[in-house]
Length: 231
Image (cartoon, rainbow, N blue to C red; front, side, top):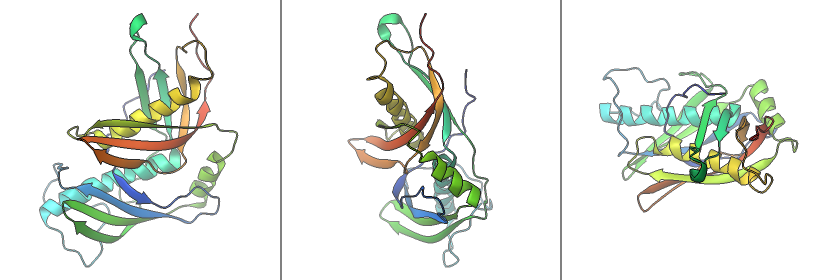
């Protein structure tokens, strides 16, 4: 099985309130992005989610704001719907390349009326926004179902260079890969040929920056397909 490439977004989360309980109405939290992240946005382009009414953003600020909205959309999509993955554990001795592919189960639509930005401010080179998202009963029930103890839990971390344009998304991908490895390594004596399934975040990834690297840490619940072993 091979997954189609997922759309590239670049999340940077500073704080998000914990969620996942049935009956939850809102997910909300603070998100930020550095001015170092620059993406091309056409002047005059309509923003999918408007900033608070008291803010009139310059074109450069709109570019940064829109990029952050892309990151927020990715995070909420991953948090609410989870992702499908396919993993081939690598081994240099056998000439097997380590391969981890994934794609979101579903994505929130641009301009989703359930998402709103209720606060915006700048601190140094960073833009901050406070985001609220109203969950539908179906979304809340889905999140609650994934909290079942029937789905095993594992965590991991991944880090990449801050110079990488995809550093946030790539660090999350690497953390998810490491979570799969951390779960199966103590349980499988022989290296599996393929591992696939779905995973759901128990909370939003936590990010840290140090020594030119960006690190993402996360905890997941998994629904694994049957393991494919070597003959």
